[in-house]
Image (tube, rainbow, N blue to C red; front, side, top):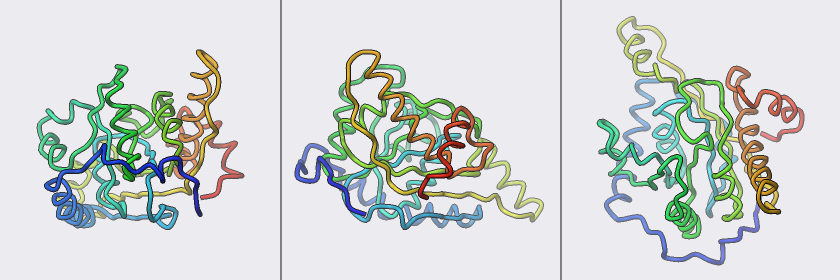
Length: 249
């Protein structure tokens, strides 16, 4: 499937990935794939839906701290990632965040520099990982996403690849430990990738514009929900139910 991307002819050097970061990704992603395969039963579905080249956005459900490394490890191309600024100072995560690199998000604040960085990343041809819910939910039931991410998508004019993730609950590590102590089955992790979607342009001003952005991000979440079991649908249960008869996975 081909797309007419607004930024295809506008590749600029405004966003670059340092050589040490590229090296870590080249060496580290296979290590993390091996780690996940060793500790868990990993299942990948719909990988053929991922664009082979060009910039796009990957939107995921975000239950715990495990989804980003899981997706970053198994995605065919290294993804740029946007994450809460706290990750870069959080024990256990800070080192990996610094080595892998990423775009730091100040949650709850309007950050023009953040917007510029995210647009520069896709402008330079990199695919970008986003979590429209705005942070970890600590529950498998999806909550309503924030409209701000739809603004990035609107400005970029790029397709969004929905990806649903199962099994990455907060208790994943205790479940792994229990499976080895009891010699039981390893926890199952799944990455389900849907076909890219293109959102309608956002028009209007003020509240009308905000509602259009919310509608677009809700559409993304419904497509993620369509990839997941019903217990994951949460806030989007009715939209997923309406979407399922027509969604093209």
